[in-house]
Image (cartoon, rainbow, N blue to C red):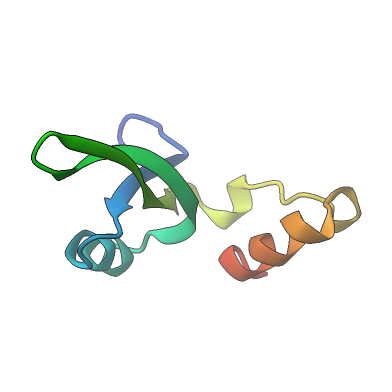
Length: 87
């Protein structure tokens, strides 16, 4: 549906409290791109920030992408980029 609407990528988050959503996204071709805090009820009447996994999936073809020039990337950016989007 996202491709039909012209989206270049989609993303979603998955709790780190249970592996099922993580596995579903990974099996659907999503890549883990990072972690972010989100609020979650950890007990009755207790809400805390917990880390969630952030997943993304590129929907456009390789020939539609202009890859970044590696010399314009910091080492911290280049390393995960190369892992997530190998040439």
